[in-house]
Amino acid sequence: MTLQGSLPPATVPVTMDGSRILVVDDDAGIRALLSDFLEQHGFVVTALANGAAMDKALAVQHFDIAVLDVMMPGEDGLSILRRLTARGGPPVIMLSAIGSDVDRIVGLEMGAEDYLPKPCNPRELLARIRTVLRRHRRAAEAPEPQGERLRFAGWHADMTTRLLTDPDNVVVTLTDGEFRLLRAFIEHPRRVLSRDQLLDYSAGNDSESYDRAIDVQVSRLRRKLDRGAKADGADELVRTIRNEGYMFTAEVRPA
Image (cartoon, rainbow, N blue to C red):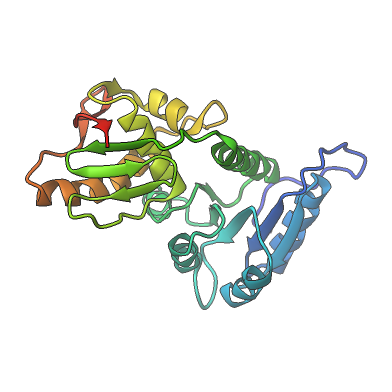
């Protein structure tokens, strides 16, 4: 078994959440362990062995979050993650027996919300799942400013539709996390923001304090913004301030 800890006794009270969780792992024992554990905590779990089975499930059912193993025969978890991110699938938490920083960063750069090394305690996975779900629910339920369109350095951002266009009027696709981070920057332009501030502004009080996760998210956003900035002859829009954090350098105005 590659997960730590044991299942809680059946008498443990749980809060009925009702969120649908998709678990994809080729290890039948892990699928059974996670299914039993998460179901005892009020979740509806579908546990599958591979990406092909996942595709069939996603075609007929909505899932609130997915837990993917990285090392699987056939299509691996990172390839599945890439496909899910490209088509706007559910947020993803990766599980992997390869627990190095490099592999964790790769997973985060590809769009994973979180990354846990195996073996992990099911209770820690449960806590991470709840954190990701709360973050996404808060983002979905937060009232959007009506008709708020902003421009900066030739870019246009529609905060209502979450549509971002570059100086050539090409739409740039952002993940939910990248858009929340962009909002934090353009709502606090030309100010140095620490990693803790960016976590607060982009994720809220339920976020975990992962400095490296913020660095990865900033790196992904910066690559997308710098492409348009350099084409427009402008300086980088997100500047690293050594030992302090990051600064959004552009002036932001109503569009």
